[in-house]
Length: 447
Image 1 (cartoon, helix red, strand yellow):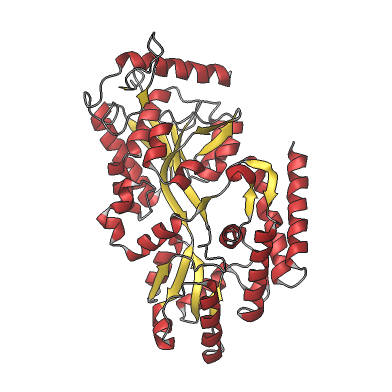
Image 2: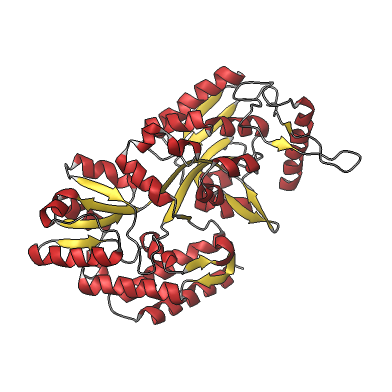
């Protein structure tokens, strides 16, 4: 049934080619434009490629859309986009507040019942499960989005389907972790922000000697989201073939073991506390109270530290011994088109309209979340924000969290492995070997 629906959608898209126009001949959020519509290539009778033609999708007659998305500032942005889209197309759009992390699960029940949002916001790492469950349509403009968006964002909303890489999402925002530092404490010590991990370790030791009740460096010691940068920067990886091949796991190779040894060194030389005593709340408290020189965190922590009156800066992660910048995990928020939608073409047009550079810049202005559009990387508004610029710089080195279903057991297994390393219960190689074995057994049990 789902296959039939999908084929029907493709047939509608093919039918829309009859209405296609030359570049620049049409305007508006729901039709073709020079920069935003994909080219459709055909073949002439003599076998030569025909000239590219720009596709103008036509919304279904009587279309009206429901968009699921977060509330607060993000919800206000959706409402703004909805109003602009309606002005351009005449298609009414209603926003329903459904959290982006809740939407994939809710759609599994609401989608078949015809109650789901036509367009919904979701985190990219749900793409594999959503595709397997038949919940999402392809992004019909994949080639254009590959050119317009950061590689990590584009890869994040794509997945292997029937042996081929298929793009599903319309990226909205990207976030990753970076290095926070207390500027007052650096000035007091006469330090410049550390450019290498070795420099960070030496500064942290010196700072600790002068401030025995403080610490030089903190990060969640077993949370793989924060540790992945050290693993990947040293040559480890989660899955092979750009995180699409679960039969190839690189979390106990030489690079991953080096990351484990580095975490053990951080514990032994800088932060000799049990894992249970280095929680996110404890790290935040130390930083806000001026008792922490460096920490690893994401843009979601900015407001809290600014409100606390801390003077701080943010920069790219310090380079590892091999000269590499740690490849931190990145997360992508994106719009997806519900495969159960009665109006898939109108929904596709809305998702595309919402992810135009104009609408994404407006989203940044309203939410302070980084747009993954390459063109907007040069926006003065973003480049003049030192905090956002730092996260943007780090995002260039980031790797999208794997979005295949086999990723689920990785989080727990790596938590156990790095807890054992941090607490001194196992050597890095042994702990990571056990972790990988646990992942393999969990994957096998899913089959």
